Each structure stands twice: as C-alpha cells, then as structure tokens.
Length: 255
Ligand SMILES: Nc1ncnc2c1ncn2[C@@H]1O[C@H](COP(=O)(O)OP(=O)(O)OP(=O)(O)O)[C@@H](O)[C@H]1O
Ligand SMILES: [Mg+2]
Image (cartoon, rainbow, N blue to C red):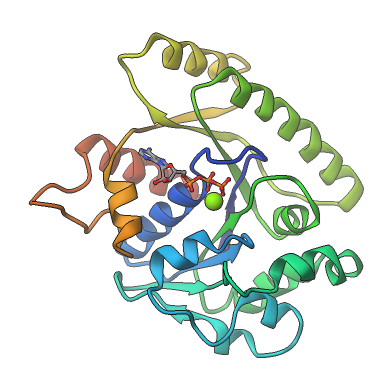
C-alpha cells in the first residue's frame, strides 16, 4: 500500500517546496520508489529537479491529453525519484484549476489511485492558498503536514488552516490526517523561534519538527540537485539538517 503526503499551509514562502522536494529525495535515497506530483502552477519543484521542460505536465494528464505514465519523468540527480511535473511558464494547470476542476474535485484522488501500484510513496507539492486545486490535493492525501516559519502570522495561518481542514473533512468527506507541524528555518539561538515552537507545542495535539536554516537548499535548487548529495567547495548539508530529514522520513511514512 502506498502513502500520499502533502505539505501545506496557505501562507506563501514557508518552505513547502523545499521540504516536500527534500523529503522526497530522502525517501528515494532510502531505496523507496518515490513520486513527486507538482500541484503548484508555479512549477517550482519541477524546475528544481528538471533542467529541461518535459513533453507533458500534470494538467495534460488531468485533462486526458496523455497517459499518466507518459508524463512521469525520472529525476536525474537521484535514484528511485520520479516527478509528475507542472510547467511554470506556458503551463495550463492554473487555467484548468479555475475552470474544469470545479466539476471534478476528486480528479487528483483518482490519479493517486492510478499510480499507487507503481510508487510506494507519493509527495504532493502545493501552491499557497486554499482554492479548488489545494482542496483537491488535500482530498487526495492520506496526510498533510504543515510547514511554517517562526512568526506569529504563521501561527495565525495554522489556526486558519486547521479550521478550513475541518470544513473540508465534513463537506467533502476528506479523511486526511493532520498531526505534524514543521517549523522551518529554525534557529535555536533566537528567542522568538523558541517562543513560536513552544506555542506550536502547546495544544499537545501536534508533533512539532524543526528544520534549521541551511544555505544548501537554495544552492541545490539553483543547480537542479538533490540537497543531500550536493556539495559546494566540499560543504554539503548541515548535520542538523540531515538529521532533521532522516527523523522526518522515518515518521512520515508510518501508516
Ligand atoms: N530551511 C531553510 N534554510 C534556508 N533557506 C530555505 C529554507 N527553507 C526554504 N528556504 C528558501 O526559502 C525560499 C522559499 O522556500 P519555498 O519555495 O520552499 O517556499 P514555499 O512555501 O514553497 O513557497 P510558495 O508559497 O511560493 O510555494 C527558497 O528560496 C528556499 O530555498
Ligand atoms: Mg512552493
């Protein structure tokens, strides 16, 4: 049985793409056949892992213009990693999500069902916001994990997300689990970061993870590489970052 995990908070720039892409790499490096589905019309995770624009994108599959297997591409920089891409420039996912998707909110759930025999682990990268596309992706997911940054607005964003998720569960019969939060770009030396961590822990309902600030992410993204394998002048990912992703990878895929 495969498992599908989305990383989402409606706030922009909190690290959804960085964390989903890096966790997918971690999963693939541990020998598991892993698929990233790029559900963001910006196509950031696709341009990160693919230097050249492939023939087909997710939106082509959703609109029946090609078979799903024809659109999935092997990620060159790491074994066992595959991507169903979205084109940031010239792509049609945004227009599809604003038009036809309204009539077929379960289309991503069906797609995940179709690929679940071939891929043990499926990671969805979502765009900021909570529109039709993000809701469809959440319906398709077994679990959603919320990345946030150490700011009070991120905590507000989390409360909004929890509220919206409860409506989605009720109205769309979504069964997505939500019991993990990731505080991204965490710095143990900063008091405010510790306060936000304590606030996130407060309810006791969430397991809270920390991911440090690490310049390797931006450098690996610029070079179309997997951050765990990438080095600049002999320096790779920080030990604390590697440990954080190793722990996350162990916990996330538990059924
Ligand atoms: N832990 C980190 N340390 C250093 N840089 C980071 C870290 N996490 C993310 N970044 C950088 O922050 C920027 C924003 O991250 P990212 O694109 O992953 O956010 P996002 O939530 O996916 O944004 P969007 O809402 O636009 O989809 C990127 O340049 C990324 O390299
Ligand atoms: Mg993103």
